[in-house]
Amino acid sequence: MNRRTTTPNRLTRTRASRTVRSAAAVLGTVLLGALTGCGGSGAGSSTAAAADLVSTAPAGPATSAPPAPSSSAPGSASASPSAPSSAPASPSAAEPLAGRTIVLDPGHNPTNVDHPTEINRQVDVGNAHKECDTTGTETDAGYTEADYTLDVSHRVRDLLQALGAKVILTQDGDRPYGPCVDERAAIGNQAHADAAISIHGDGGPASGSGFHVIMPAKVVAGKADNSAIVDPSHRFGLLLRSAFHDATGEPYADYVAEQGLDTRSDLGGLNLSTVPKVFIECGNMRNAGDAQRMTDPQWRQRAAQGIANGFTAFLTSGGTNNLDSAVPSSGSS
Image 1: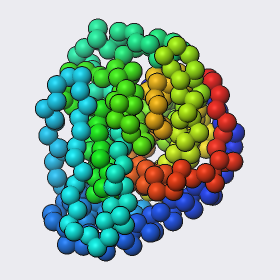
Image 2 (image 1 turned 90 degrees about the vertical axis):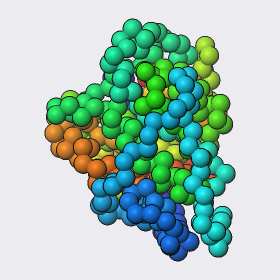
Image 3 (image 1 turned 180 degrees about the vertical axis):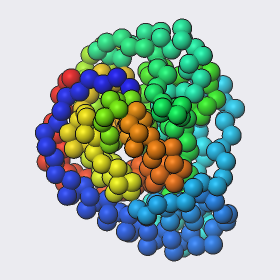
Image 4 (image 1 turned 90 degrees about the horizontal axis):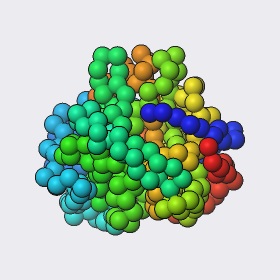
């Protein structure tokens, strides 16, 4: 997607990585023991999800079909109930995200291309007006960003549900277009989500590669006031960056941002959010190497693991106040 950036100061990832590794190690020991014998084969089972969450080794391709689109009408969020536990010895340990609500926002929509008038409608993002939505990018072979974001979101949902979280998708391929960027933010706000993420693939220059996390700048203008969520969103972004890098081996973007982190004030999904939220550009779909990885189901499973690990580290570490000094101060772009 189009970018307007403010480059953050150079950051150290040592403490964030330590937090992610510690959370993954503890969860691995507990989850694998608690969920042994849970039903099913394939990537969607609770046992497989628990094993994948704490593994940085390549995961096998998902063998189960993506979930069928929900029957919710346009304008409503697609909510998936938490997966029931199999009488774990310690529910709080076996389901560390029990009681948490997480919103996943799969970027764009596979059928946006068929609705140019609707998606080009201008919406208020607080400090400006922007298009309702866009079509997103694609690889040279025609694998679209919208298809990528839905696939990865389904994988993340399965992992988080296995840990007890309630997961809501802003769209599940069940809408003719959108939702618009302001509605995507509103879905997280109305759900009182503990954290939210918008999942994307970038459309940068073909010579550039790598992933980056986009965090909100402070925006208090018009209908936007995200001042309360800037600091926790930056802490989330730092942990997510470490978790995604550890799980996938994907390098930090070499064409935008600095050390995989960017801060922006032009994204309605961040400007209008009242819950901790970040965007992740999982790679550059216009780059041949990134495109090859992003079309590989095994790599997409590792990407989902990294995102789930980031949520888990953030939501089980009390906001990680000890990372404050490593988080860049917010600004406007």
